Image (tube, rainbow, N blue to C red; front, side, top):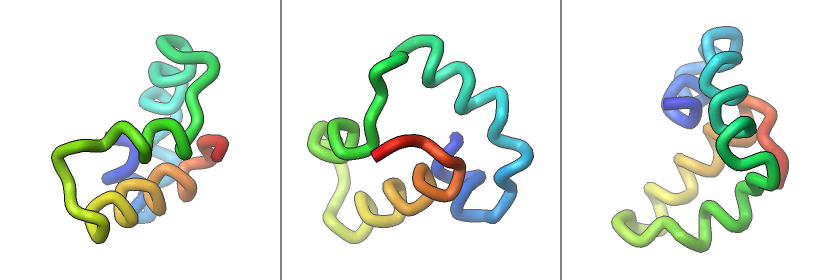
Length: 59
């Protein structure tokens, strides 16, 4: 959800989603997440990662 909202430039609406991600996984990193996305092609992975960057999650 955070990646989708980021892609829609609705960054303010992601606060609770980002907090939930970091609460569940304090060591969350975009790089690790990207390497584990198995169901998506490279173009979709790039969009997901771009959205996560937009909401301020760490690489």
